[in-house]
Each structure stands twice: as structure tokens, then as C-alpha cells.
Image 1 (cartoon, rainbow, N blue to C red):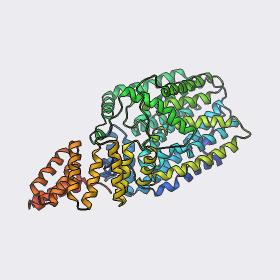
Image 2: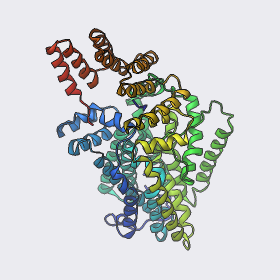
Image 3: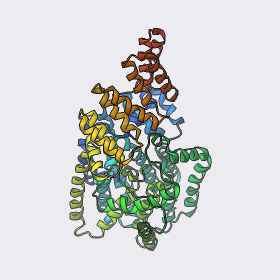
Length: 560
């Protein structure tokens, strides 16, 4: 078990365009080629972490059997497009991780091209045509090879952010292009932007920040009415989906699935808010600037008081960025726009939803557009050495990304890295133990489970996994003792009762086994419950009932 707007006020009028010239030439090849080059090896990686529960054990995805079901996904309240993308992958290729990873790589390549295109249009509008190529190339290459994006690309479950970014960036690009059009063409471009924005929202909730970014762009080009109108969109979404949002907030805050197995509860909202503000500067922005010490499960010390020195430093840094953005509005609107995107996009939005994990690197994939634009602005200031610096930066970042990607190759690599960097957390030890156990290294697994329990003695999954090792060694006494401890710690999960039923069956205590499996069934309707119940009923010679249980198990069978 694992825990899992019009254009008045423009300083430089862009040249008239025909077609879509931002998407042609050698720069485009360099951007797309670099993105593919640093991630191509991840196509051979396997599933890790939340990929199992979120994809392979998700019946909505695994039961997708004909294309007509695709429309049903849009009835899902959250992440419909993300789940549909996983379901389509399973439909066409089965549970083979290779196509999942290839799809992630393609999404990242397209996103890097979109960043290039957005940067090109931003530069033509606010910097000048002569610098637009260098500016766009820098932004596109930074996005293509920066290691902070590794988690969103090399980790299949990270697709929720990169796929959302595809529609988010697409909507922003179409909005910018529409400002150069008139009449019916402008309406068509706007319609495309709206459709892409809707798909972004249906991909991941963080897209609620998109209207604020679009409104900021409209304000920068002097289209104040359009800016005010777009600002109404998130208000309308909040009003229309208030009950769903409130339910999601409550569910996320309670963190029941993890709390039920003894994991630490989510931070209270105010502590989480302060902690996230600190992390936005001292984790995310630090890695954007100094990409080192990345971690799939970082320890971030909670901040419970506003007088915390690191929180105050983070607030000063964020305030300084706001001040710079405002002061540069007259002469450096490209810089102001980059700061706007960085601060208004999901980097800040995540502070409002008290998630169990304050930090996860895939969440800042969209916010990275702001950093890409800021880096491009800095590099374009020095036309003499800018290209050489960009080439060196691209090479260095690319090598760092190649190295970082190795962590996502398999569960052992992932949790070895996390355990070394976060030894004070129980989850890396627990999940590394499971990786060792799966790899047939039980003694190392038991050692890691011991480390996890030393940190958190209430961690029921550690006892459950230990019992599996004891059971494989035919040490039923130790296995049963560990499972009883797990059931005592987490009586609302089914797995200890299932395994205790299996042990009772092994010892020919059939009535006890049936009682235990029925207890598990009252908690969870799952494949393993019905499969083992069928075995117990067969042993009791209740063959018709056993057959029904086996058929139910077959219906619920997960993809492996």
C-alpha cells in the first residue's frame, strides 16, 4: 500500500502579419527539438507514485471501452479532459506506460512552441520587431529544457498541469493574436480563445487564474472594458460552481484518504496559506533561478505566524516584484507582463486550497511562462552576448533536466532520491520500502518500514506491507499481528481485513475468514474483496455464491 482587449496605448505597433509567422523557421526547430531531446528517454519509464491509484486503479479510466463514452467524461465535475486523455491512451494502447510518456513529451513540445509564439508576439508589441526573435527563442528554450518542468513531463500523473497549460497557453496566445485582428476575424480568434479556456478549466481547476492573466494583458494594451469584462468570468464560475468548489475545499482540507491510514492531516487553511507563500519564493522561485535540490516529496516547515522571518522575507520579495512590475509599466511592458503571469497564475492560486502537500513541482508548470518571459527579457537586454549566454544556459539546464529525469524512471529511483532529501518524512521511507518489496528485496523493505514507523507510529500501510513480507515467508503469526495492528490504527480501511481473512482461510478458520471479508466488503467494494470472498465461499462449498463473487471481481478487475 502506498500513500499516496483594442490596442490604444501600444508603444510599438506590431507589423502586419499574414498567416501565423511566429511558428516557422530555425528557432521553432530549436525549441521543439530541445524539448524532445531532453525528455526522449522518459518514453521508456514506468508508472510511479499516484499513477497507480489515479490511472491504473481508476475504474472511470479502465472501463473506457468505446469512443462514445468520451462525452460522458465532461459530466465529471473536475479534470474531465485529463481523465479522458488517460482513458483514450488505455483504449488505444492498453496500460503500457510508453504511450503515456510519449503523450506527455508531445504535450511539452507543443507547450514550448506555444511559449515561443506568445513571447514572439509580446516582444513585437512591447520590445520591437528586431528583438522579437531572440526574445521568443530564449523564452521557448528556457521552457523546453528547464528542470523544474521535469515532474510535469516525466511523471505521467503530472500531465494534469502540462495538459492544462496547453489549453491555457493556447487561450492566451489566441487572445493576443485577436488584438491584431478586426471585424469577423477578431471574433473568430476570440471564440477560439474562449473554447481553449473552457478546455483548460475542464482539464484542471488552476485554470481559474487564466481570466486574470488575460485581463492583465487587456489592461496593458489599454482595453479597459475588455479587462473588466474578463474579470467577471472567475466570479461567474465561482457563483455557478459554488457548491462544488465548497465541497472540493472541504474534502481536500479533511484529507480523509490519507488521514484514514495514519498520515498527517492537511494544514489548517491559515497555516497552509502562510506556508505556501513562503514556499512560492524559497522553493519554487529558488528552483527557477537556481535549479538544484529538487525533490518529489520536499519537507517544507509549516508557518503558523505572520512574524515568521522567512514568511516576511517572502512577502518582501513578492512585493518587490509587484513594485518592479508597476514601475516598468510605461517603458518595459514585456517585463511587467512576465511578472503578472508569474504572480497571478497558479503559483499564487495554490495558496487558497489547503492541499495535503504544500509543494509539488508540477503545479508551477503554467506559472513557468512568467519566468520564461522574465528570463527572455533579461537575455534580450544584451544583444552582443545574449545568444552565447542563452546557448550556455540551454546546455546547462538541459543537462540538469536529463539528470533530474532519471529520478522518475521507476519507484526505486524516485523514493531513494526523496528519502535522501527528506529523511524526516515518513512517506519517502514507506514508499521506498514498497519499492524494495516489489523489487524482491524484503530485508531492505522491512528496514524502511521501520524507519517510517519510527517517524509516524500510526502509519497503518507500513504494518500492512510488513505483513505481506511475513506472509510470503509463511510466518503467519507475525503477519497476523501486523495486520491486527493496522486494523486497530485504521479501522475504516478494508485492506487489513482482507489480508486477515486470507490468513484465516489459510488456517482453515472458514467462518472467521467469511466474517472478516464481509467486514472488508462493508468498507469497500473492490476487486480483491470479491475475489477473496469467492475463494472463501468455495472453501465453504457455497459454489453459486462464489461464482457471483468471481464475476463481480472480474467486473472490477484493475488494469496492471
